[in-house]
Image (cartoon, rainbow over all chains, first blue to last red; front, side, top):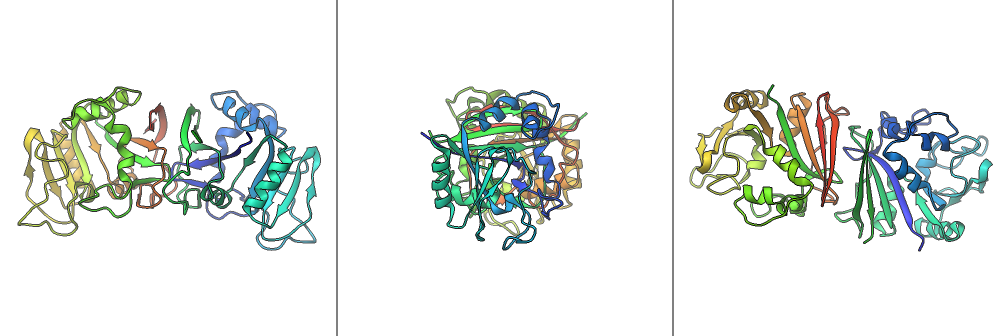
Length: 214
Length: 214
């Protein structure tokens, strides 16, 4: 059965992005610290078209997280660029350059309608203004039997968690403090909506905590 | 060299106590969920004078946390009872009964002076109104070469962390959400004050994250 699989990197104090996010600082001040564990990995660097990198305890976790994904959902903020209606003259095309590392349909939750955006390498950004349930249905259809990845950010994740729609959750817990920014678990209540911790992996610079339904 | 060793159980959303703490609910609503991993352990039950319990991956962590401690520091809120001046008619003597599980001097940070309180089994509560640095100096002296345990709660820990006085920190991360209450890492900034993750232990119902100075 296909699953909605959420993955995100989070600081020890619960932030998934630092303060003062901007086009220059998409992850907010200090936010890159959340992803240092990934940038040192061969698997992650290959995905971004970069050379080098190491294999370590995180490698199987990253390989698992990339396997069998047929579509991705993300929030407008994670797609990035600027708030409000899309700029018609200089439309934002995401953080990832001409050939984004998805290579499948990516559904972007937004309040502002926009035509789909075809990128190189099989990535197609589809802009969904009809809410999280509609985005998920479209993503299931596009994934054609594979799983759907929920990539974040905090606000999109909070909505899917609170609706009980997340089947798997991988928290990459980074042993650092950001002090402020966007907290993942704000306003989602006091339950994990049926998710239980099923696997812990200690790796350099990160602890991978996998939650799933029993 | 003697060290100040801080240990605390924290939910995935960063809370070390639930909301609505009271004499009836010292850990706040849902707060007992933070300690279920400990209550199933033989080592912890023995400490509280209870029978039964199991040994698991947490056992060595608990044994290590109890070893070589000569004094404990805690906040007034953790000592508990009621806020404000001490009740002269019915003075609060802590949550732990006549024979508390410390068996050494315990320094309680408070704004309200009070004579020391001698309990059974070697536990002596000393009430310190002269601040965290003074409490630490008194605790070093009482520990006589052993380490000092910083037991919490959040507010006391935040003060010692922000002052750069914590030498070791054991976060017992519990895979649950409390939704509200007292957050450990609020107002302590964006650094860990020289502490680095040095060890991760995955155990039933908890992940033990140990931080120390390099």
